[in-house]
Length: 119
Image (cartoon, rainbow, N blue to C red):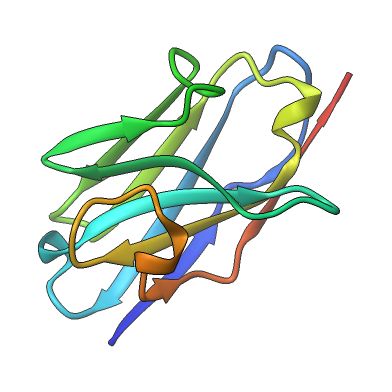
């Protein structure tokens, strides 16, 4: 079992930055691929970024968001720069046995943290 707890969400203005954190407990953190997803009201959950040795990004965030992980702290981060209103969503971190952009392949999920960007 892996437990994931996100933090760092909030309300920011367009153009500002925010860093999300996801603390993991349970089995060995560095055995897992870690991903970030988001879900806006009325929309399906979408892939944002993933990391396990290498990284993947959704086209919509490439160049603005950066995923990183500190295996010593069992924590994965999502640095979000140049935020805009379209980034408003609940952000979830997730853990999987292999790096993937598909939500269904992640077996463990956090509770989510709200990010709201005002324009």
